[in-house]
Length: 612
Image (tube, rainbow, N blue to C red; front, side, top):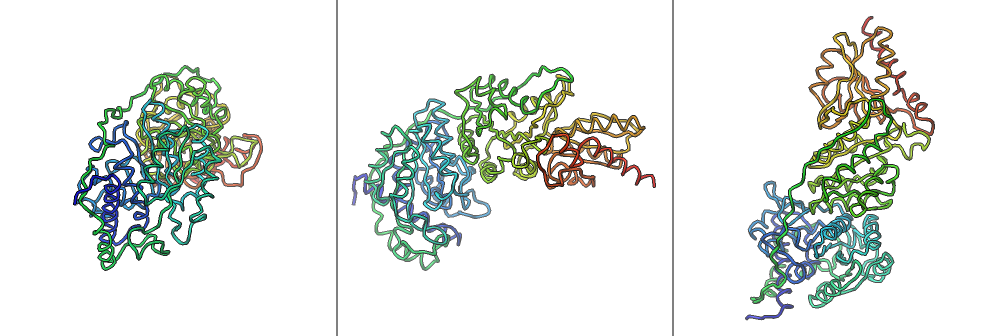
């Protein structure tokens, strides 16, 4: 029987997607089939009726975008991509295998998927970033984000709703798969659509409610979205496990694949609903705008030796110089731009500056979305506040995101503001990110040069900046590269090597002068690249001096000392070991034993022990 009805066509596709979800999960003996079943009509309507997409060029910018924020429903996304021809259907049965691209949750290894999802609550922020990118590019396309009702308990979802509402992102559409059931029990509001609607409307969104299993009602909702002058939120009432009678609205089946016997029963229910339907999708387009290759940056500095400037301010100066070279560079800040000095970029390039307010999790998600559309993205906040967005940063690495992150106000050297504002864990956090680069400059020249190095790096990079002003110690022709270091003081008679970073470089240089006057020679190394380390220079210094002291304005766990120790060099680690508190920077550095006096004392101890 042939039927030309678009409704029957989409219902047919929905049931095909159901089969493509339950069969691979059963073969894999793991997965979340019931979460796929509830969203079958939503995904079918989007991919085969609503979204403007080119299956042959699915990665081009002039496609509509789809983000599966409820990433555990990955099989139904894979099924849709296979059905539109992005990859062969046969690949679906490799789900979750060691040698398969089709992982348990979506990752960009799969063509048609730009970002990793699965850590819930992040998709809407990423979608906002994509929508904002398309606005900047002047591309009239929409971004669709499918949310699970369990994940909207996450605060990051509401951060995204808040900013999108303020920005009136009319090209952003969120769909709530309101299937009532979470992982371990019913969701917070279950099927109370009014509870969701009132909250979302209060954030400046237009809202509609529909039957998530009625394709005609879904098409009506998506048509409303296209006419909206605000971001649009569709509350789709669904049933978890829909289409398989013994799974519908049943608790306790969230992450459980069907057994072979259950699969056979399910197929007997679904297969009779699949008919031969002749219909040509009208939403397929010919995309024409690929993502351009990223540009390379260069930078020139204009400082004099001895100039006093905070590295956070030098970072702000560098952003302006880099922004002049690329109109696809964007800077985000979390309402501290006058402290991080991104204000320089905001003033120079307001159209490429995005204030994300005090919502760091959303800021990182937005940055991930922006970079996925070909933008070079810098984002900044106090180093300590970035820890709030650690999961988003972790997930960004799985998205293979190209993010440049700046954390200012590092260490006890910020002074009187006290420990709530002190970044003391950031080196450890960023060193642990897969594929990350961690940089810690000590003066204006090195900061600007390393900011440029970050701009040219593909991946997650982090630069740690300091609040107090410090003297410029490098000439403008000095070069800095990722994985390097600078030996600032050395001789053949060096007895100890002092490895420092950022503000402690200046303390090490003070210690050098005082010890030299006593006839004690030490080697001083500026360890500006903490990940990767300049292992060759550090190992040579250890071999030649036999002793290494590391000194850092950071907790000992995961900082410079432990990085150097990973080379097997057994350093003496000077770090922040006492509970920090308010005070003048010099008082706090002294209390922690990481000032010049602390370094001198440790050098004397080592020499005394060595001469016994």
